[in-house]
Length: 271
Image 1 (cartoon, rainbow, N blue to C red):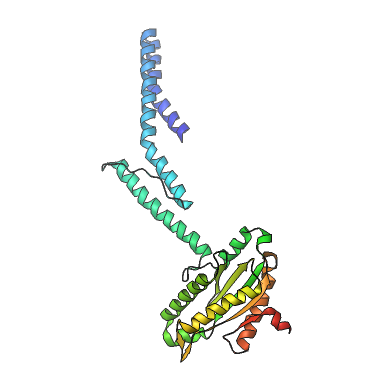
Image 2: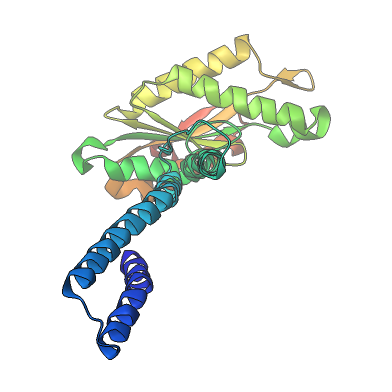
């Protein structure tokens, strides 16, 4: 871009000079001193023209930089210029567009790893956090938790109440676990909790405390019964995560089959 501008300015400013030199030589009026003066004035004019053009293009460079920052989710750095001239209006417009773009990019980045309804991790977000941990730090316990008869909550109380129950239940899970534990909405009314560095017994104890609180302070009632959950637990690590999830899911299915409102270890399936 700069090279093209320089070429245009050079040709535009030197064509008159070239024409003058050709005319002076053809008419035998060529004066070295005069030529030097005109050349000097032409070069000075070229420098001033380029400086002015690059000064006028500076807002465009700032705008491009701001939009690049916005696309990366950064806060765009667009200086505000006082006044109501073209440059001030351009920078103000770019600033608004860049701020809006940056917010949309941050929102997209959040939604890529976070469930928008409950604000806990989604499946992709939990796996990304596990992948970021050293393998030897991921050994622990895994629990799959599913709200019992949740379809009746939507059918009897409405989807708005159902959404509120999911949101509040997710926050109860987060409040009950350690800061190092990971809570994710795994799909529908099912949540996955990963307890790195914990035993399965510790995971079950945490789930029992959550169940007790849910009985004492129900999120909703299905008929005359407080809403409950079933859960399946197992030992796990990042290297065995997929298999552990299948074991926990099998334990959860069996807990549902045995009457719901219970926590079952995958080890109990082999008894």
